Length: 335
Image 1 (cartoon, rainbow, N blue to C red):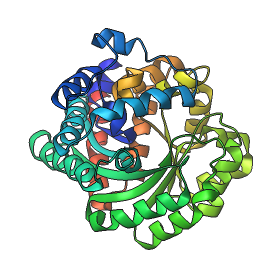
Image 2: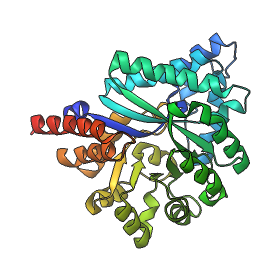
Image 3: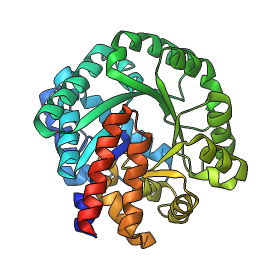
C-alpha cells in the first residue's frame, strides 16, 4: 500500500506555503537576514510545535514568518516545498499564500508574489510539477483591509487563480467578507474558504459559504455532515472539500476518520491534503498513508481522493483529463 500511494499521481489543493517553512530553512533565512531566533537548535524549535487548538497553532505559525523578508526568501520557501511535493509524485498543487501576514510587516506585495511565482515557473521546468497561487485573506482583520488587498492583487491577476479565507474563525463569519468575495468573483477569481473543524458556529459558517457567498469549494468543512441540507447542497453543486487529516489530529481528537469515510461513501468530492506540513510533520504522502491505515481503505478508495482532487482543480478540462489519465494508468498497473 505504501508503494501504491507513493507512485499515485497526486493533486494537493489545501497547502499553506508559509506552513511549509521547515526549521532548517527557518534557521538559514534568519541567518541570511540577520534575525535572531529564540532557539538553540532545530530540535528545540520542533519541540515547540505542540498545538491543541487553532489559536495556539496560529501563534507559532505567524511568528515563524518573520524570517521571510525578501524575494529570494519566498522563492526558497516555495522551491523547497515544490521539491518535496515532486518527490512524493504531486503533479499539481494550488498553494495558499497570506499577503497580509507579510505586507503588515512591511514586506511589499510585489516581493511576495514575484518570489513565489518565480519558484513556480522554475519548478515546472525543472521538476515537472505544476502549481498556481490562491491568495488568502486573514479573517481576523477588517473586511476593508481584505478589499484593499484584493484591489492590490489585480495587477498580478495572471499569477493568482483564486482567493481564500483563513486564520482565526471565531467571530469572523463568511458574511463579514461578502462584498470582498462578490468583487473577487466579478474580477474572475475562483472562490474557496476555510470552514475549520469543530469551530464555534461551524455549521452556520458552512451554510453562509455555500448559500450566501457561493464558493466553488470548501477547505476543511467536515462539520457540514451535521446538516443534511448542507450535505445535499454540497452534492448537488459538486463542491469539493479539502480535508487535512493529520492537521485535524493536532486540534481535535483524531483525523476525523469517520467523517472522511462517510464523505467517500456518500460520493462527496473529498480530497486529502497536508495543510501546514512543516508544523504537522506530514506532507500529502503521510496524510494519505495515515488516512488509509486508520480507515482500512482499499487502493481504489485511496485513488478516489486523487480523482476527486483533479476533478475539482482550477485547471482547463483537457489538463485535468491528462492528470486523471495518469491516475488511471497507475491504478491499472497496480491492479
